[in-house]
Length: 118
Image: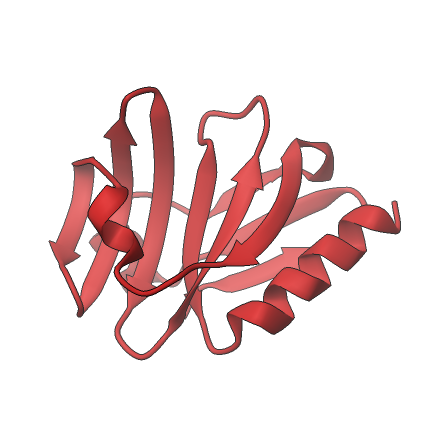
């Protein structure tokens, strides 16, 4: 599972070597001022991602990589039995980052709290 770190200055999504291969992308680090907020997603969220360029997908099992649709660019790394967490971004290469975590609600609360405490 990717590791998410956030503090008052930066948000970092660290991927393992295997996750980098599946996603065809490295770890992501960006300034905290680019993060708007975070929220858990509903089931079957992957149906609206658009075209995968590049990445890996077996819906319901693994969704990883960069997805593009109508001006929306999303980085995703999610696997079965993980809850999808969406991190919304502003003025960045990606519009959103979606990561599979154990407790999406708790991560969203932690990220949103870190953003409001800055």
